[in-house]
Length: 385
Image (tube, rainbow, N blue to C red):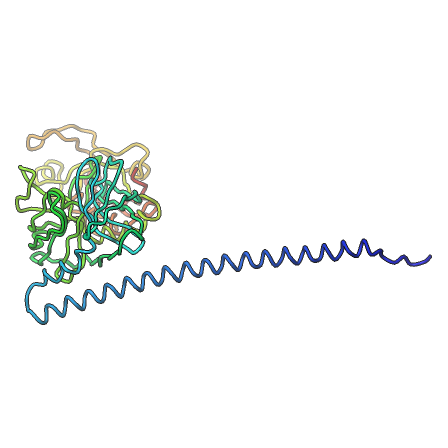
């Protein structure tokens, strides 16, 4: 047999195929390289923004400390001068409020009730720049919200978030915002109490509330509460008043709550709170005596929500209606007196512990008193709807 030589035609197609394969491989390699470079550039830009913000924070702290050293005075003029560029006026078709710049990406923190039910949100900066804002995240259970403006709309000056857990009663603070629409207003006072709670939707509680005597009025909502170092330690949110104006008692959401929720609000648009699924009443002296407890401590479960984590853990609600101190309640339910070896004196202790330390899916161990006997019950926390 004679050996056949390949034709020039078949060689041409072989070369073309090889060339095409090399081209595809190179294109794929270049595409992957391009996206890797883009991701690296994005990561570097985020890191640069973070470093820029940290540098700005440090410069602010040094300037305030220098002011204190030189004048020996409370630094409110310096604090105001530093933070005024971070405060915004928020206007909706329903009313006015305040907010403050959180980061260089245009995120602004305010109260949920400031933008609740609003169809348009308008933000005005110190220099008069006005721009539209979009909703990013909302949590009615903590009265917090995040909105966003175009970061190129104006020069952004983020605040410094402090540690509200370090606050002490009597510490000087100042509220900054837009009371009655009067922009760029600062009022000073002290922390008059800590650990308060406020009502939230569906009977839940907003915990760890800061009570202040700095004047807070309508329009201040969503503005920052700052310490004398210029750090934001709270988000001004409410007052107690019969007239609707300031009467000596104001409240702020702690900065630690904001720091805990902000990553989820920005990334997911919401924050999911842990949920047990019970309702009831704190044990009073009269209740303790009636049901035979040694001391007035704990939370008496009156109702267990069907299908809830409490229901699955077989906690028990009340089954006998009685009158105690002129009040009709159901007794016979479990009394919660501890959680994870922490004492529970009242509902607030239970809520504070779970909010600060737990997320949905985490397990807790409750210490309960049932029929006069103390026992432990394990429970897996659910998601508050």
